[in-house]
Image (cartoon, rainbow, N blue to C red; front, side, top):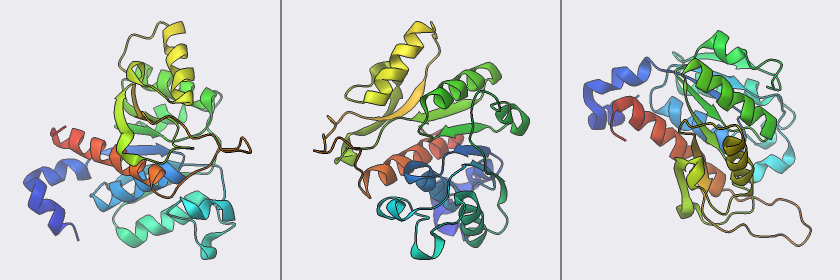
Length: 225
């Protein structure tokens, strides 16, 4: 099933198969991360999410269908992953990741952690834990209220602009005197402000963000980034 991809990467494909990835939050961004990684040959994946599929997810989440409404997202993705590649090992954790249970990262010991959650405290805890454990990671910043996927980029948190969530994280990194490189997915687009003040989303910006993250991880594994 990976013949077309192997034409591009050759024998290095075996490197991809050996890597273990943890994806925290499998919604709009995280769902596409999982999708692309599994379709690229990742055979060891941990998915963490406490939420269920809701009707409002259908505009942007790859797992959200009429047939999955009300189901646990991790259950949906386990089935989807196995339907793509039955050989893929899936560890699913239906849980809200926070400071009190962040050691799940240490216990699972992934090679890569992809943070696609929405909670600032959790993002901070993930970054701290990954730095402590010397685990590679990418943290997704905000994709809500954005319309142009061409302005997405993976960069150090200190270089982000026009991203309210990234601003919070940037200030925290400075306050904590963290000197390490903090790799994030962020958009340089000035956020659109909906009239009702609530966060809007598209089908293509979160998806593009997830695919960009997956691409970065695969290229990093292959030594081609």
